[in-house]
Amino acid sequence: MKTSKRFVLICTAMMMVCMMFTACGNSVNSVISADEDGYAEGGVGDTFRTVFFDWSLDSVSYPSEYEGYVPAEGMQLLDCVITVKNTFGEELPMFNSDFQIQWHDLGDGDEDFGYGIEMDDSSTVMPSEFGLTNRDSCTYHVVYEVPADASEFSVSYLEFFSDNTEGDVFFAYFNK
Image 1 (cartoon, rainbow, N blue to C red):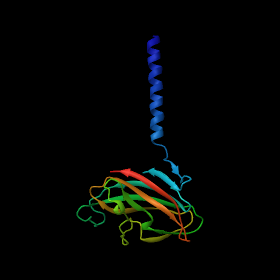
Image 2 (tube, helix red, strand yellow):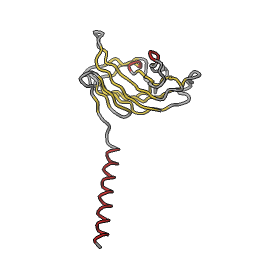
Image 3 (cartoon, helix red, strand yellow):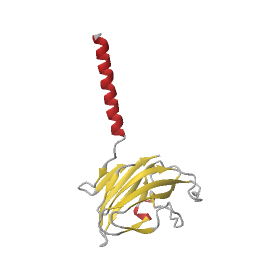
């Protein structure tokens, strides 16, 4: 009788531990600010807190085409869903090019980055330029054309100020 009670207690304790880990896996992802060196890194689902806005890379996919756009030979499309929330206190000018893509596994040196494809007639792709009012948020697709062999990526945002100085840099890393 004692053995079966212990067994039940042990099983119950193990189930509770498993439920705790499952709950942690479903929790809200991290909010990440830059360190004292002006650098921040995270991944898909993390929220990055910049001086102007919070942003997150919500998901990534690799479609064979996007709204009729087909990649060139030797290239692939990378569809990144990005959410931005204005926390600055006034309207912000935003650009598709604010979010740069880098690939890290091909050794291309200075040629290992790119910008989103401009599709100004699309309602889902981040516009080339738009305004984001105070406390407003938006979610757009940023579609990149990257080398077909690339599989290690990051999307980055670099703070840039009106006096032409740079601030902190934020990287969301992911693999194919």
